[in-house]
Image 1 (spheres, one colour):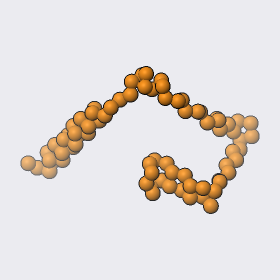
Image 2 (cartoon, rainbow, N blue to C red):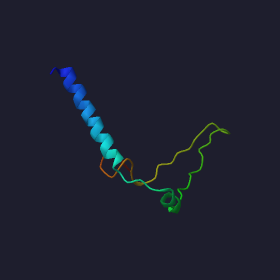
Image 3 (spheres, rainbow, N blue to C red):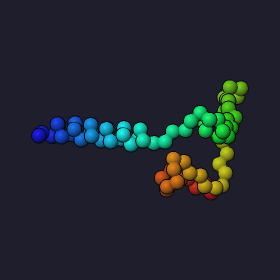
Image 4 (cartoon, one colour):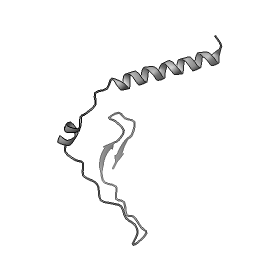
Length: 76
């Protein structure tokens, strides 16, 4: 077995395992989705009139992309 065949077969095995695990995840039905509260849409950022956008940084901590330290900002 050469390196190219080994890498191709490893990638195919990883893809098959991932597809299997993804297909085993529970899915929500339409009735379950309908019973959940809808998320509010934030106001549209529009700079059409002035061409300027004012941003204000507030003191605090925010996280995105999970709860780990990656993606966490502290503004002081």
